[in-house]
Image 1: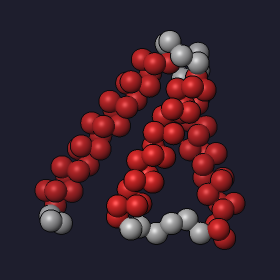
Image 2 (image 1 turned 60 degrees about the vertical axis):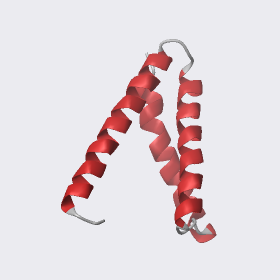
Image 3 (image 1 turned 30 degrees about the vertical axis):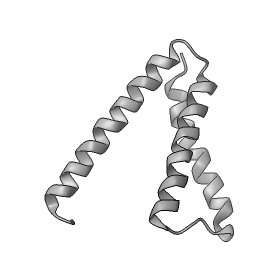
Image 4 (image 1 turned 120 degrees about the vertical axis):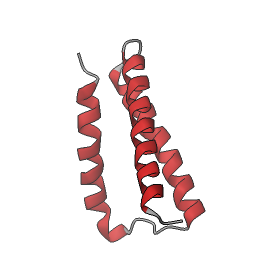
Length: 86
């Protein structure tokens, strides 16, 4: 069902989920160390990513691009880590 309306719904749902995730992470940040909040956030994302790849039979990362994947992971990790620091 690839209609413009389904794309708008999916985008709106993504905004709601990401805002809720950010609110929970910030609330947990008041009670837990920054590293724990960031670790759990990305560990949870990794679980869903593996599940998504398995269910959709999507392409898996190639070993030839491992350096790029590591660099991208470091770039994605930095802003959330700084976001929870006081």
